[in-house]
Length: 367
Image 1 (tube, helix red, strand yellow):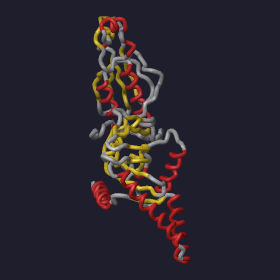
Image 2 (tube, rainbow, N blue to C red):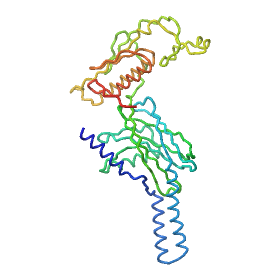
Image 3 (cartoon, rainbow, N blue to C red):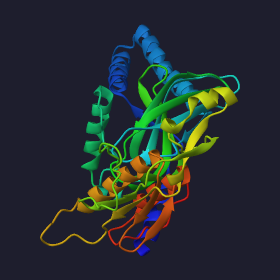
Image 4 (cartoon, rainbow, N blue to C red):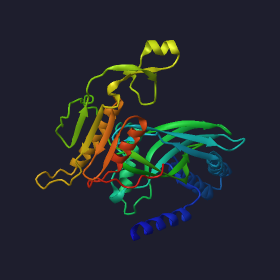
């Protein structure tokens, strides 16, 4: 508790001491500054008026660069839209709304970087599934920063770029987020930067945008749901299903969560709305997914064994619910009764995202 309180206090002090703008010369900017020093030194030694004129023009470029870059960042506001379901180990699209609140001035070459609160002990929060040159350069840059003694207060989650945001307009961008593990992911802030107009300086401002999202376990396709008769499967998670046959009893309207294979298309076209077939065993077809949450045994020292079991259980939950079955989840200490539909999917996946090796789940974060 004391360490958490001290960490929050340090973060607040850093936010209070954070400068409103940060200006860093680029490689071209350093070269331009060296040329200015050379021209200035030559003008002082020779007293040539032409050199003084060139020096004044170069200095005016610096002033113009500062004024125009400030006008590009002044009215930028960013809003994050996180998808309802985020799975670990796969690409998830996070949408950003870049809004320019200025009435007459456009913003050019605006780059928005979404940032995460660093994990404990500096562990990676995201995985890189695909890399291009910019991503590889960004990865090398952050590796260099990690070698420093000072621990960063935030790590990048993704970047988006808008060439122009007109006055009063809103540009929609997105980036791919690939969480490395399940659990709570803490978004910390946005870093809005620009190199407009000459690319000599990188100016950025950072503002807080705190948000907590729940990352579901990694889901794999294991060949479809198993339909057995009171027969357990081998592995860390066990499936028990009951299916006594399918006798059609009638039709009903389509509800969210029903599989498309049960849609009766002829009746749907006749009535003008989706209709699905209903059978006697709809309320009897139940599946129980068992998650063995006990601690690993000394003879099986696999640190990732429990995480693999959670991923397997989540995959089975998704597959069985997609087939229209009622799914229950049982651990060594918890039991979630069988239900079907979207709500049960969110309930079970949220539990599996927060479950610990003792079979209990932590409190669900605000979303």
